[in-house]
Image (cartoon, rainbow, N blue to C red; front, side):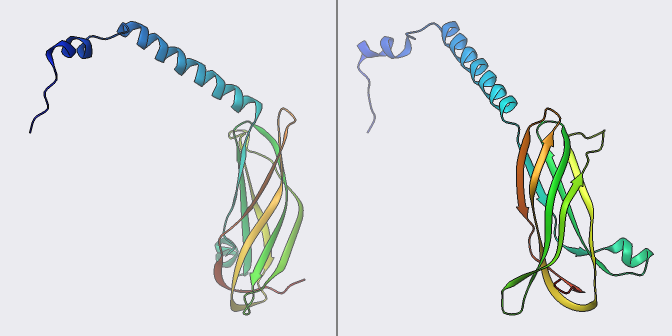
Length: 172
């Protein structure tokens, strides 16, 4: 069964009501306005993200210093250049009964961005010695703020995934 369109409707359906150049102008104007609005929002509200990496045994310390220690790395990235990152960080152990306990605390840790990458800061000197080679599961937690070059302070917080390793750390 085919559908037939009455002949008087064909010219009306195929003839555009608005000239194409007007439609193109309207679409281009809308794109420009939405781009300007997006740029204005990004300038007014700089954003920062935090990446708390998994707690792990430091390969460098183990291979070159014959010393076992757990290590936590934290990075921040912002849409604007930053002056510094200031954080409090914790290494948390998952106990056998599924509860958790803080085994290491790092307060007022400061990260300064590399001049080549002013939007990024990496904090990688957060370590705690392994007291034994017992298997345990850990995760890292960090919270604080990033101070941008324009003086704006942006709060950040994050948590790593859980990772097991052969490094026993006692709660302090």
